[in-house]
Length: 610
Image (tube, rainbow, N blue to C red; front, side, top):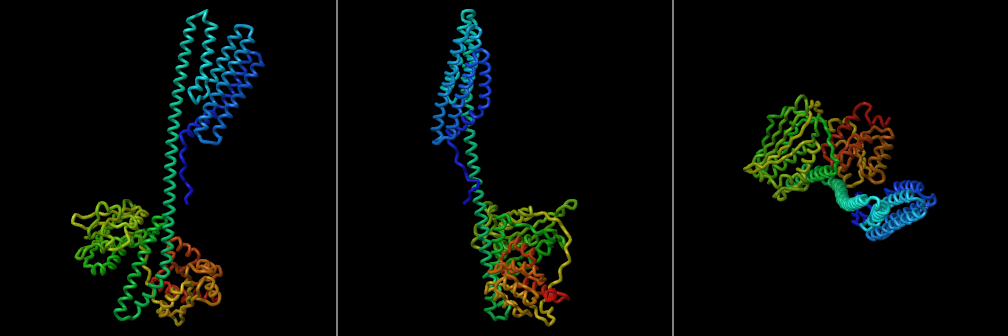
């Protein structure tokens, strides 16, 4: 279950309004404390000190009660709507107490005053105190009236009492002033309420957007988790399938190489070809899982594009001829040789997938055209590689032109001709890594034209490696001593069958611990080490062998074909990696390399024996 980024419930409007009022009241604590002290000092200048101190302490106590009511509403139990309603009438009650307190002080000060001037000053001070009460945040219009009406009434009463007989025009001016103040404060209250409601609405929308973003993030994380689980499942399934497939293909290959009569020879050949197709499907599934999981990486190395295209055409020519097709190659704009610093296997894989589709979809009598061109870059910059494969099949509709580049998707009619719908998705994923593009067009008369374009630096090609001589040609009378650690009985049998015709003395063990023990007991010219075994796995056994100082060539046999796995084996000291199902040419090349190393003076076996 995914917990990160889970959506939070959106608070109700009552909760938002309550939170807004609480934050507003909390923000005025310090200001009201300082203003109360200032009013106390001002009152002490026009009234006895005892009245001033009583006012200050009582006022602070009432404001303490006020903020206690606010905090109780903020943190108390119950629904937000009920706490908001309670806060509304409780703050109005405390406001009334504050107003009554000021009015009582006003009456006491006036009664104690012994001159008209002091009474006038005390009256003005009281009006200021009442105005101070009126400036607090009001949660309702009733609370506003409780705060503003006493201050306005006091101002009118003071004006009438002091100035009405002396200057009636002054009373009219004061009345107009009071009306203006009331109108202004009432409009301000209405504006504040509108702004507050607007702010609450915006906060509610913001929280709703936040909830939607959280839900989208949770969905993304869930999709990534599902995608990783799918990739892990594909990798595990591939590993589990490759183990028995290694036995099937190995034995079928050995049977095919034996001198069988027909129709048994044809049956063995069919098993080998079907197994090769199954192996390619497994590789494609792993590739698409790595692309979707973001684990695919480029491995740049010098690569002859022209040789790769010519080899591909040579490989597919017999299959095209069987289907009644003509395979044409256009390399007029491709130099010979054409050295690129690119991921050669991925380029070959993309071309293979496109040509495979073209041969599959083209009807008998059609033509499949493979075109390759190289456009030099400016001032030594990267060159542009363009590859095209055209067929005369049914073409691709505009509705399918984007969908066919997604995993497990095929155009209409594709299922009838077989395939898993992975080839084009792998092409698109590889080109995304390479910064290239792939497009498809349908000709007016039918057929599809796939275009690939990507940039690559040109480079000089290294000298070709000499072909490995057969192991029998290197036999100087001593048979190659090979230790094979493999826990699967079928795979052990495959190794026995494949190596029995070679000058090899094969020793078989079933886990890494036995391999380490065997290495300590006698010298070997080569070790074939399965990666996953009980008791002690192959990687641990390899590290133990290297820690003991042995230089014997060790080749890992593994169904884990991810690049990070291969890198891990090589970092531990492996001389090479043979992926399951075992390809005979890879196995024989590894044996020939080991034989060459041990035939040299001071070879690995001699060094270990010393």
